[in-house]
Length: 205
Ligand SMILES: Nc1ncnc2c1ncn2[C@@H]1O[C@H](COP(=O)(O)OP(=O)(O)OP(=O)(O)O)[C@@H](O)[C@H]1O
Ligand SMILES: Nc1nc2c(c(=O)[nH]1)N[C@H]1C(S)=C(S)[C@@H](COP(=O)(O)O)O[C@H]1N2
Image 1 (cartoon, protein in one colour):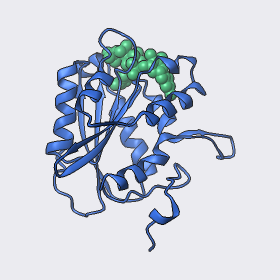
Image 2: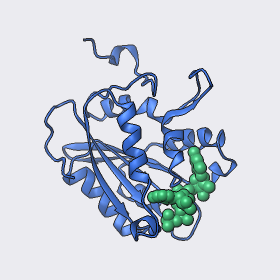
Image 3: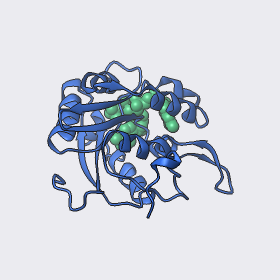
């Protein structure tokens, strides 16, 4: 899908990259991109479009996809899923750090905290987040684990049976981060994910 030209200045362009040897070679059907797409469909109240890639766990291919999504497609936000673990071919964090101009360690730290509420193996994910800046554009790139259910878990956090937030998901901090790097104003459906902005940054209608 090509989403190069924005039909609306507030539209956010989101790159979704599924990194899996087996899904990219057809051993199993990719569930990463559908899970990401479904989550954004449920969470975003402002306009958005996606650009997707399904690639193997190869560092050069990951770096190429990330650079193309930010520099050529001009995505404001890029999420990867897969390849964050300790296995020999898990190289997503290395590729992400290589294309970043600033590291954003809070996202990885918070994701591991959230994931520990779900699985003790959360500490095996080396996920990172970075900003990639070019002379006239910037984007936030974040790694999520490969397990498809971890996408909702990390983005949305944990809620109790009444829907009350127990642990905030990382997406709560993403709209303000995108504001700060000069991207579009992202609005969310609060029942899914309440975005936090300082009062002075909240756009008045
Ligand atoms: N894109 C995907 N689509 C569907 N299921 C996936 C995907 N990626 C991972 N999974 C599931 O999550 C589990 C853990 O993911 P992990 O990234 O460790 O896979 P892996 O063992 O490195 O293999 P691969 O890179 O071939 O997906 C996998 O065993 C698989 O069941
Ligand atoms: N929220 C959440 N985080 C998770 C998981 C999960 O199921 N849910 N799986 C863990 C496991 S088992 C591994 S090995 C690491 C790395 O996974 P990856 O290599 O698929 O990125 O993510 C961890 N983080």
